[in-house]
Length: 121
Image (cartoon, rainbow, N blue to C red; front, side):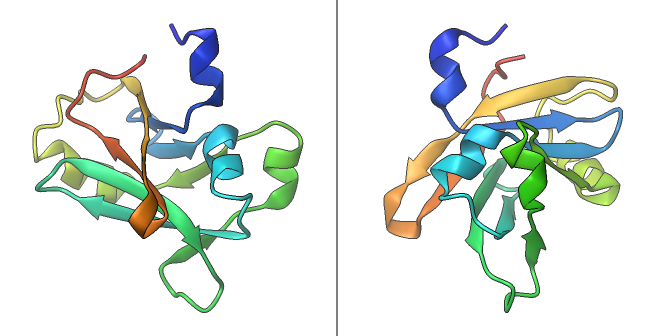
């Protein structure tokens, strides 16, 4: 269960049953409520990172403003990506939902989420 102080931390959830990566509203706010985000994956380090992007970047995902203005998170459906991440032994099991707190990397202006650590959920 997440504590009250975690409500203001960058959080990323992995839902393996629905094949979703959920970027929580707090994370989007900490990134400056961007119109676009970029998802960066390093399977060797078992790390997912998120940073603000822009529409000129073909790797960026458009964030629908109305979703997080009304309190919702941003969800990315990515079955192939999550199946690939499961092969690098992050400790994930099909059907589970895991949440991770992120760490700011100021030099690169992104939040990294180490997926080998024990999840919040």
